[in-house]
Every structure is written in structure tokens, then in C-alpha cells.
Length: 479
Image (cartoon, rainbow, N blue to C red; front, side):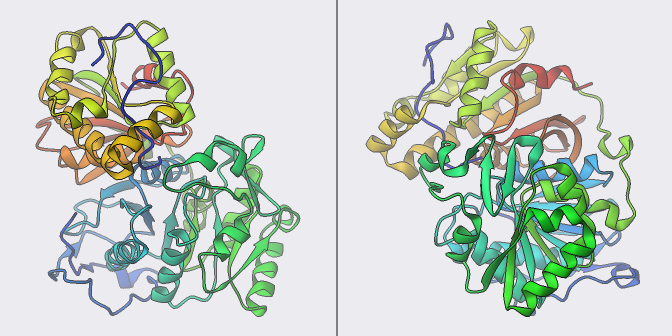
């Protein structure tokens, strides 16, 4: 999901009424007993953090760091589908896990932070994951490679390489299930190049170049190379040979071509033992087998769903605009909220909750700030980019809290920044990852004091993911 791709108002007319975690030093029980111990941690303390020693139930296999919340669930979803038991942590946990899992995904909100802050957060996450015994580290970013010439993909990746004392890693955002493919180093979204996909208009990370070698090189001090499709097609041995050649040439990071899941499955074995892997979520499908794990339905099991249903949408991506329109055209109740009204002092959150309360018993309702790009720019022109996004995030977060108070226990949230704000407002620290709704979007379950007892089912959807009928069909697959 893309920050500030939300706006002041609805994209189309409708019949609807208008209107950080504390950081700790942790130690893992049994981490040293694994055949392959975790990569060495940096000895630098977390800047200004209080240090405490806690112990973990057991060591984890794969430790993941994601640069936004929906991207974290996207990655966790692919790991679960490949058989891993996965927990997603919201920020760097304050203590070790109380349950045994195969992988932990630490969800950060670092994609568009200043690079120094993004690096600091990633290194904090790394230290925690290492202390849990993680055998391999995975830095996950968006499948559209959201970044600028200043970062944050390159700077964070290199900082992790330094901390892990490794001289080489790979990078590929390929996710063929969601039509993200890499060919000769160029990123395609469906049938078009990245810079022709709409991403060139992103308000914070406009992607004007589809050549990932060039894009990443601008962000890195190390040399960036390419492992092209011809090598990938030959499988593990050829990929390992190419990696050795690149390392001998002084290359530190390599973009990897992948145009199908078969390519990612061929890549996976070649990454076994690599201290750091970077990519979108697609790479994940080939990693669990390296740890002897096979797909299993039990990995995605969640508690039974209860309670009322609602959707909150803050993304203004093309896909989410279509999803909002489809929900409205299906005759379902939908309410658009307006940043200018919020800025004028109107209590939009209270109004939205009053609108939703009598409707919730009849099925899912939608509250959205989703709008097209021209509407987004118009509001940003009046309020400023940061303020327009911030006031909508705060309002949607307050609405999320209010909906749960009204009895909503099945909540879909569209947009990475919106998801982050809502999850934090609901005081959610960890989520168990469940079954997939659409590629990249699973149902999750969380225990939180905002929803005492049975807890809360959540689906955090990246703005660009999901079929047009996502907001309606999401609830039909939850039992």
C-alpha cells in the first residue's frame, strides 16, 4: 500500500450518505542448538532504547522485516501457504514470543521514513529476530519497488548486509500471482512497464524507471548486478554459479528475473544458507522447503469467526477504487469521508459511526476515503501532502476503534498506512496468519483488549491487491 494514496472524498457518486514499541535485548532458549545458528548480530545498541533480557519459547527459522503493515501480511500469507506457522508482530516486539512458530514477520512503517530512521528500525528488528534464533533474514518491500533515489530499499538492504557481515544478497519484487514480473531487470505490472502502470504518479514514491538495476544502483554504494531469466531457467546450480561470478566481479546486490512461480521455485534452493534475502513476497514461496517444510492446511487454521462485519478503505490505488465502486454498485451501504470536512473541525468519525450503527446488523458496511488521483492532488494542494494523509489516517483509526466497540469482529482494511494506523489504534501487537482471500491478502486473527474474549479477525489489504469484488467476497470465505 502506498502512503498518502488516500484522499478527501469518494471516487464516484453513490447512493450512500455523504459526508512504536519499546525495544529490548532478548535471548532465545535453544537458539544455539540449531544446526545452523543465526547470523551474527551487530553489537551496536538500539539508539536510546531501554535494554532488557527476556527468553523465548524456542528458536525461529526465518526472521522477516517488512517496510509496511500490508506488505508484512502479504509475505506472511505466502509463507503460510508454503506450510510455515507464522506470526506477524506489529513493530519490534517488547518481549519474546509465547508460542512456537517457524517464522516471524516484523511489520514496520518505514517505507517513506527518512532513510536514517528506516535503517534504525530495521536494525532494531534484526537484533530481536537474531535473538530469537533466526537462521535467515528476509527484508520485504513492495512488489512495485516503492522507493526514491534516496531509498529506502537500498540503504536498508546495505545496512542489514553490514550488520550480518555478508557481501552479497539478491533483490527481486517479482510476484507473478499478482502480475508483478521481472524480465531482463525490468519490472512489469501486468503487461506494462512499472513506469507506465500508474505508479509514475505516486505522490511519495513516483516510479518513473522500470529498470531495477538502475533504480537500485542509485540507492546503493555497492555495485548492483543482474541474474537474468536464462540463468534462472537453468535452476539452482546455474544460479549459484552466477552468484559466484557476480561476487568475484565485486557485485554486492543482484536483481533476479522471475516471470513465473516456477522461476521463484527454482530460485529458492539457491538461496539456502544466504544470510540475507531481499524481495517482495513472491520469493517466499521457495524458502520453506529449504527448512524441510511442506504445505499444510493446519498452518492457516484460525479461530471461528464471530461478530459484525465492516470495511475501511484509505487507499487510492486503481484497484481499490474499483473495489469501492463494485461494493457500491452491488447495493451495499457505503459512506465516503472528506479530509476537508475533517480539517474544518467536523467530527467526521462520530458521524460515520452513527451512520454505521443501525446498518451493521444487515451485513458489511464500507467507510472510505478512497478517491481518484485528481481528487487526491486537489486536497493535497489545499492541506499539504502530509497533513491530508495524516488527518485521514487518524480519522479512519478512530472509526476502526469505534466499529469494534459496536461489535465488529471481522474487519477489512485497505491501504498500508491506513492499516498501520488502525492496527495501532486497536492496540494489536501480534497477528496469527490464516487463509488467503486473494493473492497477497490473508485473513488474520489477533487478541486485543479492544475486542476482549474471542478476539478480532482482520484482513489488511495492500491498495493494489485484490479482485474487484474483494470487499464483498472476503467475508464469504471466513468461517
